[in-house]
Amino acid sequence: MGEQFATVDEYIASFPTEVRPVLERVRGELRGAAPDSIETISYGMPTIVLDGRRLAYFAGWKRHVALYAVPTMRVELERQLAPYRGDKGTLSFPYSEPVPYGLIRRVADDLVRLRQRISG
Image 1 (cartoon, helix red, strand yellow):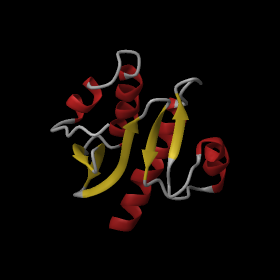
Image 2 (cartoon, helix red, strand yellow; image 1 turned 90 degrees about the horizontal axis):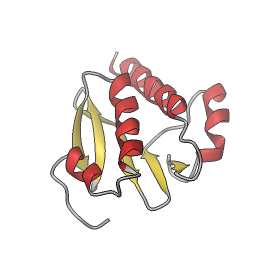
Image 3 (tube, rainbow, N blue to C red; image 1 turned 180 degrees about the vertical axis):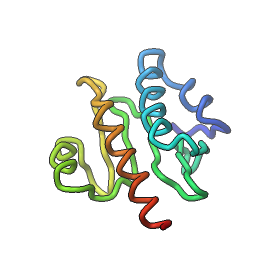
Image 4 (tube, rainbow, N blue to C red; image 1 turned 135 degrees about the horizontal axis):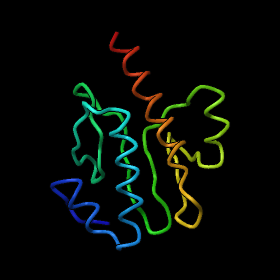
């Protein structure tokens, strides 16, 4: 999608009706793990920002929803992420399969914990 969006709501509204609930739920899982976070658009994608720093990006595509900039997680979680793991910290969840929202939430929870450890 080459369009520019001012808000995450605009971004999600640009998708087909059947994809919007998936994007809203991914957004909710990320924000639920980081209730003090804010949303912005960065690199053309919805971005969750916590304590002034990017926590995660997410984006909808024709066949999948993706999370970006997800580092290697703890071993137990990484095993569960293996089927979705792509290059350079990407996780891709096809629309043709049930989206594992609980797994996305665990990733978000771990990202918040990692941020808290780094921020001290």
